[in-house]
Image (cartoon, rainbow, N blue to C red; front, top):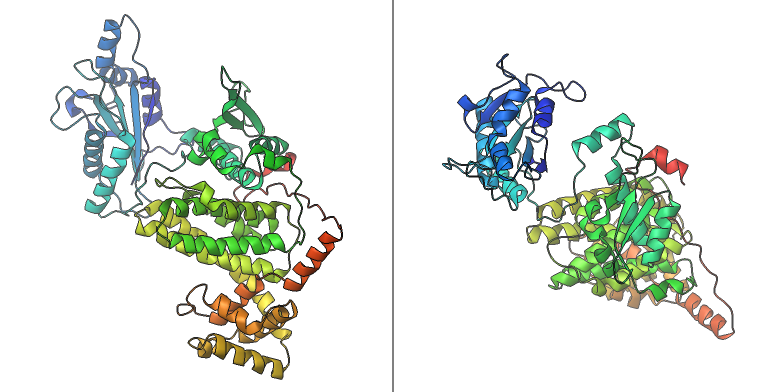
Length: 565
């Protein structure tokens, strides 16, 4: 059950909407199911003699008295509006049940506490099977305003109780860190324009993708503008520094043709200018050229940093863990942008899904996650990597997403845990699409039997407790090829198996050979590193990488994006 509190100043206008046909004739049988006093609330849905104006005057009675006391000035935002909707699949509620829901919510929100004879006037209108609209005028009979501080949060808490008592679907509790949901008007506008998402949602995804890739605040605004997004900054009156910003989607205008602006913090709490600055490095970093000595390095560095993040989640340092989850959210956008293939759609969906899991009420230590964020930004300048390295990175993200879901669940972060679990499903689907061909190719290139027997001895010596399961794993043949590549790259197979086998327990792994395969794939090529060091000493200049622009996530506004690609 979802309540959505908002305020306004047009009593009659809201009444006209509630009892009218709706924007798409979706309102059926509108009528009042509860009110501050059923005898005192004329119902235009049931009484042919009741008019919208008559009902508005009755609701505004205390407002009008207070207005006269104020010398003709109406109290600001005196209309309180709260639609309450059941979840898809919930059972049908009767009018009497909806009436009880309405009374409990106005009591919890502070609009009309039970037994308070001087409370605000309110009504609850039903015009559909699955929801009601509660509206009130927020001036009490004694002329005071009601105490509605945190009214939305209190309404949410009451809905969780109602769900349990009414045998309805139990929704996740929030912690006030969720982004603002699109309004009904925004959703209707998107539908009229045949867009799959609202302008607010589209801008949020673009902002996250750009913030993940850039190295400075200036780059952030520059890249957004290059995508056709309008940027408006707010400057401090004394220093002239940027203290805030707003974005507008291409061609998204209001009734008079002006851009519709959304402040960064209104898109998401961690997109405010202050939160962005916590994650972006010093401006001077952006002035340095970005060089990539080995195209495979960004993929290896990110994989290693994600393994480190997994360890941090188990460390007990909650601020550092939250910082790594925020950095992981950035990494997912860059991984999706740098990856090609049919699994890219799942990676983009994973990045979008993780946005709710990247923040919680726990304040993040972003400095603790510098290595992961830096490694992820390298992917924005990376060229295509060998397929094995990409799959190794995907494999690491799958396990970190599952660990993130567990971390949030243990701390009661219900919405974040659900989002991390959704991310896990997308990443797992992407991995399952991309991995089988690569594993099959490795198996096809398996070394000769004598070499495989030697590697078998290495496994039994390095990992005796897991050897039988590793050798019985269907991906063992592919692992022998990877061990052969690692040996050619300068690694000792036995020492390498011992090192990667202790990074995390293999007991719970369904395919331990597969786990080892991707861990070994992510190891650096020692002989290539030595050659590059010698080349650097000889004065050879590294080749500069070309940065990628952020790729629009799966939830897009396609027409607008194509015009500004």
